[in-house]
Amino acid sequence: MPSTRRPHANTVGKTSERKRSAWTADQVRALGLTTDLATAADILGISRSAAYKLARRNAFPVPLIRAGTHYRVPIPPILAALHLTHDVPTHEDADLDGSVDLTVFPA
Image 1: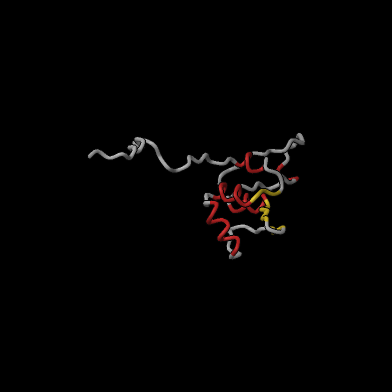
Image 2: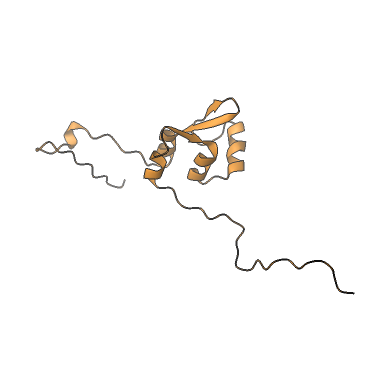
């Protein structure tokens, strides 16, 4: 007797993983002063569930602000963790004509 179960859809060529796009420094800075834990986790390449586990253990890689049942993550420590901070230009960086050289050289 033939089976009455419906066959499963063909899943060849499909991935179960969500495609992630890389965050640029400008996109991270555009978030403002803080962001939520899920967004911070995405920026740092951590899964959402792992981020909440780390937060509960006080082991998240950057400082967290807990507001009731919510977590807020400051953006400057995220940028520092990713080595995306830029030094503020000083007087020595200024050219003789008064313009400031904002060229950033890789370390």
